[in-house]
Image 1 (cartoon, rainbow, N blue to C red):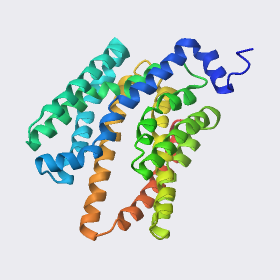
Image 2: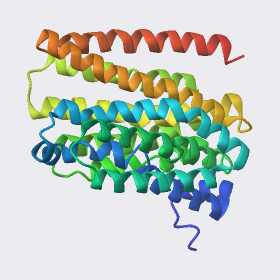
Image 3: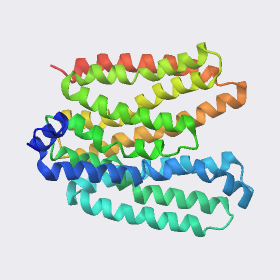
Image 4: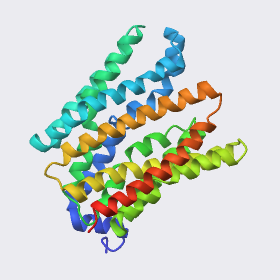
Length: 314
């Protein structure tokens, strides 16, 4: 009787991956939430006021930690991926979690030297990259194939919960909740539909968010709609990458391939933020960056769609 009252998705996941598979999804969600993709990135903004008051740093200088995280990820992700393939995900995850803990302790004890602040973040990211999707998504892949998209979506909800927990920032919570919905829904669609079409549509959604910001007058409602669209797409992209790697390359060299692709992910993330900020400083508005985003999203997704069907699908 207890089995009959379980949700259908839970029954499917338990049937394919067993109890260990379900435990892996839960532990992966926790690991993602407190790992490099979750806790460090989502908490930088919370300490800007305190760091500015304590050390006199500007907000731009404090936000430079994000660039250090991206650089550390770029340097260490391929190495962490190969180690996952050779020695397994558990030792890589344990060592990386220790690096995160030590890194946070060092941040708490640092002095007012900005370069020390940047160095700690760089080393924290490089050592803690094993707590990113490289580890958790590979663990999911060993248990699930038929329902892999759904399992990945649930496992990667950790960052969405972390983002939505920031209740004091109404828009950040919206992003977190839409990320949560996006990861689960897109994950399930990847299992059911052609993943190339799902990826093309999901990653074109930010264009709609840019259009909303350009077409509508500034208001809380406008920003809420845009934040929902951006959050949904941000939830999708982290599902799509591991799903595609496992689908087309398998798990034998999964860590090495995923780690290499994560380099481009981090490089794009860091470059995009810096370029957008520069456009704002030069022009006095974000409108040129939003127009550029619309063009790039549509052009890049169309190119990716045609490329995928030409080379990946028979």
